[in-house]
Length: 470
Image (cartoon, rainbow, N blue to C red; front, side):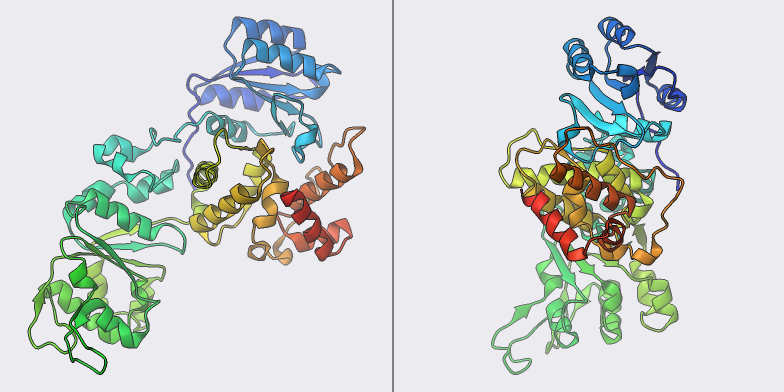
């Protein structure tokens, strides 16, 4: 999968490392992607440089800073108040906010890759949050009307939506394909918004949710007296969508007999209400969507080939979230903020720690964007109001562990398997840190985590619920 290169133009990085730890890859990559990097070996030199230069990000090794970490951070912030500070040390991860000194964003691994750090830096400074870097914005001024339909930063989504404004203006039939939760109805709505029919109605019909005996009347309507109980004329969805757009979701589940009638409607622009002798002209654009492989359905005799080619005039395929991993942080931040706004919670909203982003990016997301939105809504609803940063322990309980069975986990023995717990940390907090790190290690699989911790699954669940709601 090809990922979009981070854009760090205008950003500056100050690395503080005494030489025991090498951040050569971080430095080289930061500059490769347009940023400026400074490297010093002593805290005093770092503070002197922070006065001379505008610093956006500080990456400092704890061993180099010595005992007076808080004093260094305070002085650094006094000259660059907006700077984001990361501390690094072996086996130290951001598992609990209580061990983060004030002003520090998170703990990172000493061996963090330059590409991963560059991606984090770009995200923390909001590149692409408003869509400036998306090709859509450059193509058509009407795209501003799409917000908040799409939030993306990946090349995969750029390719999928590259022709969206032209498709919208064309008025032709569109077939949208993609897995559940990838945003097929959202895409259909955006096509409607950008089209000449935007002032007309957008009517959605889920072909899989309506019983086969009722779907014909739902689409085409019926005449008065057409059957027992038909006491009045009823217009179908094709008529109610007049001068607008009719969205036929899950078109692959439409009965074969009805497919014949739909093909005739698309060809002739007329419908027959149930029980009617005369046709009714219709004026609705049809957009269809499916989560099935319609070509395979055609081969298996489950979908008419002629209808497939009639619908597939302008195809759009939406990639699953696992093929657009770089979009996950942007979507997570967007959904978290939106959910909190809807609940009347004023900003500033909690940030996502790099460790949390790492968990989100490694999750399978079988439900795609819909699943991610639901998870962030749960977090926004249940996270304590005093939390300034969303950590893995706040989010892992809401991830569906069934999407990653324990048998599929490969525990890498080469990966560092310890955590740093400062002297004086209360026992309950140390346990929380250990639980969070174990869950991160198992990719969120609670059953495997309970096995490694030598505790019952019920005990683990109870402890997680106590932490989330406390």
